[in-house]
Amino acid sequence: MFHLKKVFNALYRKFGPRFFLLFSICCFIIYVLRGRKAKYYYMDTERTYGDANQNILEDVLFSKEKPTPGKTIFFIETKCERSDLNYNILNFTAHNACGIESAALHHPTHDVYVLVACPTFRPQADPMIDAMLSYKNVKFRYVNLWRFAEGTIIEEWLKTEALFQSKYLMNNMSNLLRLLALYRYGGIYMDEDVIMFRSLKDESPNFMGAETEDSIGNSVIGMEQTGHGRLFSYMFLDDFKRNYSGNVWGYNGPDVLVRMMKVICGTNDVKLMKKDVTRCLGIKVLDVSAFYEINWLERDNFFDETPKIVNETLTRLKKSYGMHTWNHVKTNWTQSVNSPSAYIQLVAKNCPKVFAATGKRFT
Image 1 (cartoon, rainbow, N blue to C red):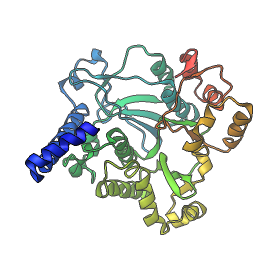
Image 2 (cartoon, helix red, strand yellow):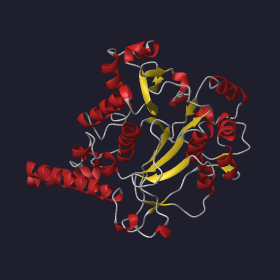
Image 3 (cartoon, helix red, strand yellow):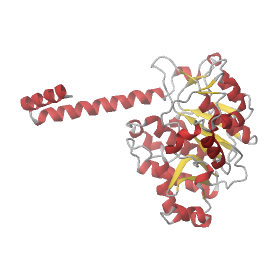
């Protein structure tokens, strides 16, 4: 760092303010080029609709089977790690696959669509994918962002490529695609790191969960395709477009819901939103206990093997629909399948096929 500072000082003495202007231009060019490269990974090529034997995921819009409006649970996968020449191979860790299986297990009358944001091969045999696809309601599909946005208020905005100038591109891609899926089809969106314990079938069709006493999470969202649900989805998309800020974590995710719920409900008080559903035109804000009983600061409690912590964690989760496990918080995931932790007990019960496929350690 000391030597770098000396270099900058020397260049400034020689070139003056022109150096900083040139440096800024170079940084901007690199930033733009990085965004363009990232954009390429999410685009079709001639191989997208090639030989069926290549086992490329079908586009959700062109597939014979379509999501059932209002009766579909959506998951979004935005990892796109392929090189310029090789497609990404579909793969899931056990803790991601568990969330998908738990949704399918507890919602047998719903379709469960996993939408993958870049053209992707499905391997012929993979224990995790086989475990998920053993449920007849689970479908893997490719979703092309631009086609998916056609006819919406996002369509023209996407052409500005602002989305790709983002420090958190995969996260913001996911934030946008979940809103588009709910706008197109209605139903329920879930993050892959949400493990369900029971069904949401008797819940209000328009719902979200309080993450804390004064904030709302976007890891689980329910919206009906028609009526107020359609209007709400439109408002969320409009806010995403108008207030996009790609380098601020959460600004285009949970903050979209918070900003719009303040408008819809006429209050900043999340407690009032939870208390009076009529104030929010029928959107139900579920209590923190629904999905976020264990907050991200307490995340290690999931994996703690101390009997007292295990019992406290399981007791706290008894009233929950499911648990958000905060994948973005870096923790060593792998744990013995024989661990007495609350996490292992819950995954064994709620995603039994993935649990059986993972081997000796839950990855």
